[in-house]
Length: 575
Image (spheres, rainbow, N blue to C red):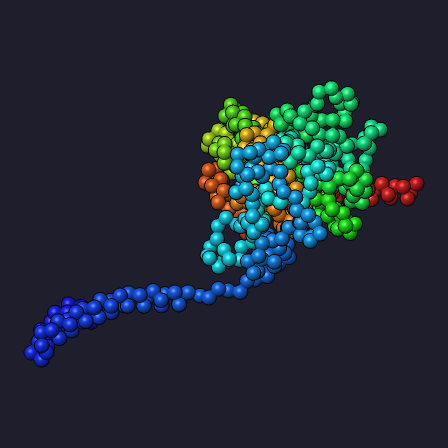
């Protein structure tokens, strides 16, 4: 129906039948009716479009060992993953936070914190950064947000805290120790802070005819007459690498550790370590539950490889990438200084290649990057060696970066590897760096008659011992601060981490049951790297098999050894 027709033409035709006043009222009615019909015609299709959208699917129950773990079951009704808290007990008393004060007045502990800065009990952090739809957002896992609370569970005057570092070295360990002590001492007024040397076994083991327990203080008090071994001032330790408490792999004995904690009256434990440390803390929490001991266990995640599940990033990773980038720059200088020069750099990364990938992305001079997650072949027309030799012929140089665990991704060669494990239970990978160093030079001489100059730089342990850079120091301070807030508020059996740029409390069970954070082929950063290096997949066609050809020599040697053994046995029998 046309509004102009209804408002102008039709009234003219009816003029002879009706009086002027009735005609005028009819004209206005027709005009409004026409505009109303137009609006309705526009609104109705929008309702149709909304009705055509598919309904929300039922929330699936995740498989065991999935990335988000079993904690998603508790989130099927948009609930936050629960973290154990001693304040949940009705008999426990709530203690006002000494950091919080009204107005501009300072708190009793010497620090001012407005009440608005305290985290409410219902605050949470989402698991993922991006979601494909609103329905996926509704099903997202939520973790409790970390931060200061208005009410505390532990009275600062009765707190006895202990700090321990476990596993391998990592840039930033001393920064975390320092900030934990400073936060407990100055912000909450805690005066009994201890450190345990040499990892878990330091709780119950003696070293050099003395126990491994030391007292930690911001600075040595004036007139202190005790032996220097009994006290460690932490004011200036953030400027050096390593850990003043020492570290060690293994040595976990849950019963002995709990006995030592109860004997000394400890009620807060801060453990700095990786996935192995968190598995130990989970076992320790079960023993404490059986004994009904009110000891708060708080973990601070640490790993250079950045493969901790759920978390965005762990401290020490940025410092390792920075040192790796510097090593790649040196390898590039070596490669460009020879006629057929190759610079080979091996970086840390037992199961994941985050350090190698990010260092290569930051340097931008890398031509080949090999990581444990992406398979490749060494031999064959489309293999790694052939590509490297062709590039050296064309560009006169090549820079290769390899992660220490990349031998697991090598498809056509099985390197000799002793299936030994370190005390933490991690398998020691085969030496991929030595294999590439020897075989590339050999392949260039035998297959292409080229004299290749290869410089091999192994910076694996150099990455661990350097002081933390500015980015890692900031992250260490933030994690230590949130760890103290969580313990004082009564939380236990959880780790403090950065999740999508926000602080979160994650239960030990979630960390232990989730898969490590690995690189996928369709990862955006990996695609950026491929674009930067221009490297092919290093995989031959399906019909081509290089494994049998290369491994034939190895099998032949084994057969010769067996024949020699048989001959020796026959000679012995004859004698």
